[in-house]
Amino acid sequence: MELEAPQVSTWEGYVDWRNKPALRGRHGGMLAASFVLVAEILENLAFLANASNLVLYLRHYMHMSPSKSANNVTNFMGTAFILALLGGFLSDAFFTSYRVYLISAVIEFLGLIVLTIQARDPSLKPPKCDLDTPCQEVNGSKAAMLFIGLYLVALGVGGIKGSLPAHGGEQFDETTPSGRKQRSTFFNYFVFCLSCGALIAVTFVVWIEDNKGWQWGFAISTISIFVSIPVFLAGSATYKNKIPSGSPLTTILKVLVAALLNICTYKNTSSAVVNMASSPSNPHSGRMESKLETAKASTIAETPTSHLKFLNKAVTNKPRYSSLECTVQQVEDVKVVLKVLPIFGCTIILNCCLAQLSTFSVEQAATMDTKLGSLKVPPSSLPVFPVVFIMILAPIYDHIIIPYTRKATKSEMGITHLQRIGFGLVLSIVAMAVAALVEIKRKRVATHSGLLDYPTKPLPITFLWIAFQYLFLGSADLFTLAGLLEFFFSEAPIRMRSLATSLSWASLAMGYYLSSVIVSIVNSVTGNGTHKPWLSGANFNHYHLEKFYWLMCVLSGLNFLHYLYWATRYKYRGTGTTS
Image 1 (cartoon, helix red, strand yellow):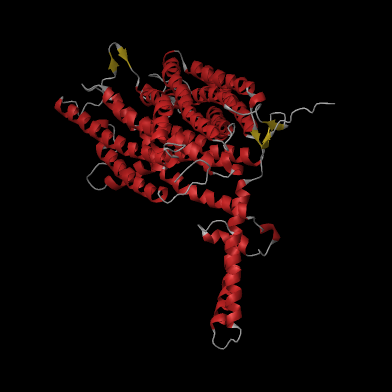
Image 2 (spheres, rainbow, N blue to C red; image 1 turned 120 degrees about the vertical axis):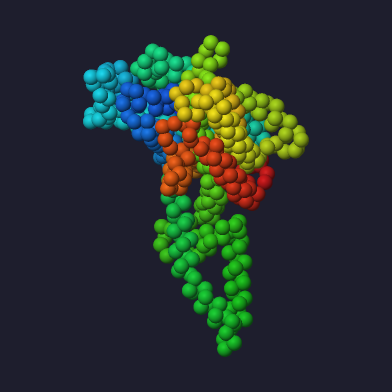
């Protein structure tokens, strides 16, 4: 008698790296996700090593003006995060997140090679300034080389941000409580690993760039992203990769168009039927009402949910064109996407507050005493405060706070995604209030010491006061970013997960852009007549930065009320979550 080999169950909708069905017990799990976490450390190191200090490279070596350097850095950062939507879309629609990461890493690697070559070769940069040679801003082919390198990096970063978090989240079994808990741990440690890469970037690599040369800084980034590729590939045998299911945008547009056309097409017909049914001269009014009620009951039975009722028209009425025929599942998927968009919108103001950490907060610190004993800390290394705090708080949150809240609430999650995001929004309000109070204290010291009109002289106040706003905003970032990544991943339809997760990075990009818009509006409104704009001029001590921070505090408070409106009405669809 021949013994039958035991059958190994497969992961439905997933394949391995050789495009064969992924097997339970062999593919997925925390081991597979650990390769993703290490790759993220290396990738974020490569990205932030240059982004955190890029404004100085553009000013001192490419001879751009301070405002133009700042705008180019903002555009570069914003573009990189916005392109995460492209990476997420390609992962869902045409390629696996596995392939999108590898392609994107190679693109970023090529961009960093271009920047390294330019930084190393003096002939590829503008000539150095001296008394006989005025500063000449980079232009022509040299400028083209610079921006080709930068935006190749931005394209690669966008693809990685759009594919890597979702790829890691897909490694867990969301049908079991243990799988969902492991997935939550993964997203917490994903933010932890982001911070690990950032810590190395804003300390060691920034020091290398300032003291040994930018060619060495770019070279370290190039090596880092190159090493991330074999590290990621080392986990190939353990990954399960979601099979692409076509363009999610096509599904969204089809449902919206079908619903709109059906509403317009059947609106007049329905009105005519109702009028005929209610007319006293119509002998068949009773039978007509009965038929309408029967049809209505049938419609309700076919549509599983009643919220966003206008989308139900996409399936309750037969479309004029067969290509617009939709399933109930497609309609429900689009409803989920529309439901999460308000939550996404409410996080943009938070990221606008975070943008201040790399702009005005650095300028504040530059006017203060930046010495720690005999060590002088460069202002560009100030992000080390929130980074270290996140690295301390993330394990505490996952191993102490979450287990305690699970026991206290007797629920699987302990703290829901929306509660976590909301707590981050509250911390951002506190951070802006603290920033305003610190600025008031800084200007008071400047006034009392007679240094208000001498911006180049350091004030007799330690820069550690700035650490408070960094710590609050760093905490807000930990709660909100990790909460957003897991919220979008768990709530989105499986065929749209990478694109939905990318919204977290798009929110960050829009926060950067909105910060620039708010500063411009504030200056234009306050700079009328004899009054100087709040945030303009050569003397930073004359800025009304405390008023700007109070404005951001008020906007954050109003944004939180707006968030509460949507969050309290949201009903989770993911397994293991509660509203």
